[in-house]
Image 1: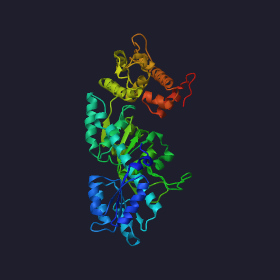
Image 2: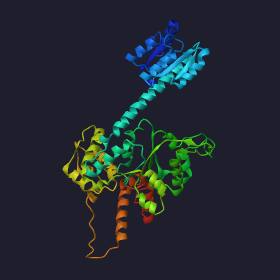
Image 3: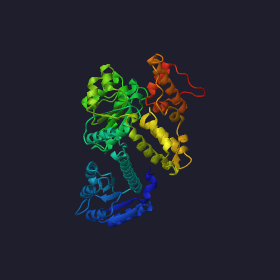
Image 4: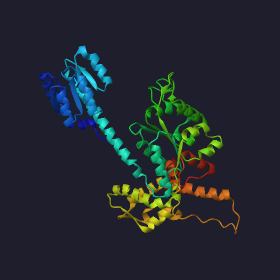
Length: 470
């Protein structure tokens, strides 16, 4: 990230005043601060200079002829909407300067000028300008990262997903993204936002499974100072933070019915009420949500509100499991190797034939996220320029093929017991691979942390020796 303090010395400032002595004094003062300064004797000259060389900050008098400071401000902002313009004014024209703030001026300073005030105002304007530039660079990086070309897949099922994502990105419809954990639901949500008309506004993401009911309204709608014990300052909720942009509600299926009712009202009314506030706040957000649950089944079971489901599910994007699009495994593996091989000084750029066979035969319970983690690990461990079988986890070598199905002609089985034992074995492997870290183990298994903890408790799984579950 750029440090604005380190970048100030390279910034250029244009001083505009028809008083030659004043502009010379200002130029000398600002040059002494390390800035690059040019001068203009009036608005026309300033605009001509600006067309040939943009400036980060313009310090301009208001009272000039024939082109005054306010007209100069208006025309400068047509050339560069983000230019920081500081106006100099006499006491008699302060009202005009205040009005100019509404038209986009950064600030004003009153004559006779105070040297320290000028320095501080210019420094603050530069910092704002540099932070804006950095924000624009970051947005470009994010747009590039979430460009459609960066969503990898050549299978017919993924091509259908790409076509649908392109269409819904151009609209403002709410979208429900469904699929198992690890299939890339958040990547799709980012792609929709950064290719949408709202891309210049915030994308705010929140994991619904991590919000207890008692904090739901504060997290979603914010609170005012003193609303509850510990509310020492006012705070905006995610709806206000995303105003004008997109709100991504991950794991939406884990919300309780109590929270669902609160969320539905906010979406229907287009307004929220911060906790402790008597006033409602209008919000304009597009809702993207994601779930690894079958919400239609949840609706039928009474665990998810039907009216909320239809509000969220204007368009549904169903992401297929990696195991159901095996033609994408090799493409994704090389995509991740290109990314993480660079961290290994660019020396790892191939996957051996035997290693690829293992990747293609594995069932991928943790889906694309698990594949990414395994390729990252392999790129670190590889000795040469190629990922070999020994660079892959034992899990792939021992579970690379489907386990042998019991022969029912020889002996009957208890299906529930077979499934339970298989699930216990996988959970134990995931805990071992993650050194007892439930969050990492849940990623390997493609479930959320709450689900994994519940199953560990339900099956009475004993922690392997030497591990502590965290």
